[in-house]
Image (tube, rainbow, N blue to C red):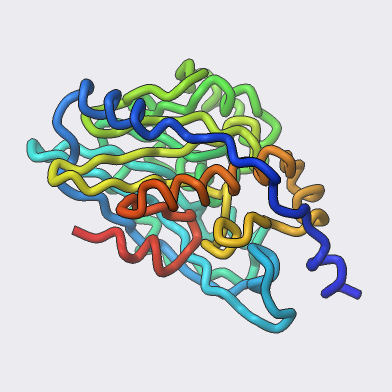
Length: 276
C-alpha cells in the first residue's frame, strides 16, 4: 500500500518553458568577475527511499547529503548558500540523520566569515542552521533572505526562526533573475516553497553551475520529468504543477547547455563534485 502511495505522482509536463540562460550569463558578467571556486561543504548525509525523490524501485535507497555551498572570489570574500540545521532541529524532523557538533561548528565559522548569505528556500535543512546558530547576531546583517521567503513566516518558524530574530531579517526584493555578486545570479523558482530560488554560478574559468535547491532531490526527477509523489507534495504544501513544469524546463536546459552542471541540493554525486 505504501509503495502504491509513493508511486503516485504527476506525469511529465507536455511542454517545457524555456529558461533564459543567455540573460543569466549577461547578468553574471555585468556584475563583475566570478568566483574562482564553488564548493559543497558536507555537514551530514543519510539514506532515504529513492522513490521519494523520483521514480524508482520500491526498495531502492538513495544517499542524501546536507550542507552549505560556498563560492569564493580571488580577494577571499565568500557567498554561502544554505545552512543545514543543527542536531536538535534535525532530530525533530529526521531523527535517523546524525548532525555532528563539529560539522555545525565548521558551518558557523563559514557563516561568520561570509560577505553574504542566501538560501534556496525556507525549509529547516536549508535555513535551520541560520536560526539555530548561537552566532546568528554575528552574521544577521549579511543574511539576504528574499521577500517571498520572509513572507513565509510560518515555515521559517518551523525551521527555527525565533521572534527576536525577525527584526534582523532584511527582505531582498526578487521578482526576476538578479545578480547578487560577480558571476552569481539568483533566479526565483517558486514551487517547492513560495520563496524557492535557484542560484546560477559562472566561475572565473567559465564553468557554470545551477544550484536548483529542492526543485529536485535527485537527478532522476529531471531525467523523467517526474518529481516527488503527490502524497509528499501535499504534506509539504508543494505546488506540484509548478515543480512539474520546472523539471521539464531543466531537462530542456540540460539538453541545450550540456556543459552546465545542474545540482539538486541533496544529490550526493552532484554536490560532492563541487570542489576546488
